[in-house]
Amino acid sequence: MKARVTVTLKTGILDPQGKAIEGALKSLGVDGVASVRQGKVFDIELAGADKAKAEAALKDAADKLLANTVIENYAIEMKG
Image (cartoon, rainbow, N blue to C red; front, side, top):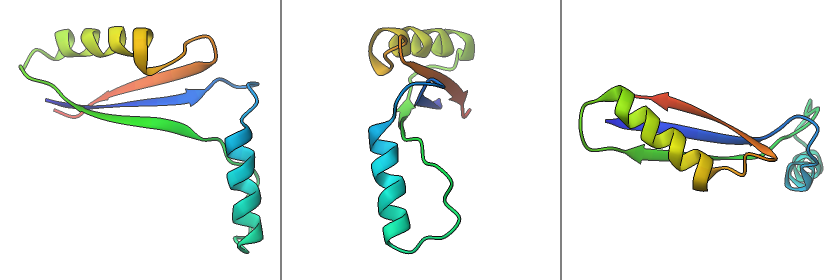
């Protein structure tokens, strides 16, 4: 079973890396960029077929390691 965990900064949290990317895109001539927020994506392959158990394990992993839940949100997408 495969899953994707996407971690993003919460609204209102300063994102200096996103601002740097935004500035770089503009300096490269990429038009129409209003703002950039950066994040992390984890593609994880899990053994077993119990979707609920896998999702619970990923939630636990995100809460403990993958995301800093004080300043970040995460979303789990099961892929089969």
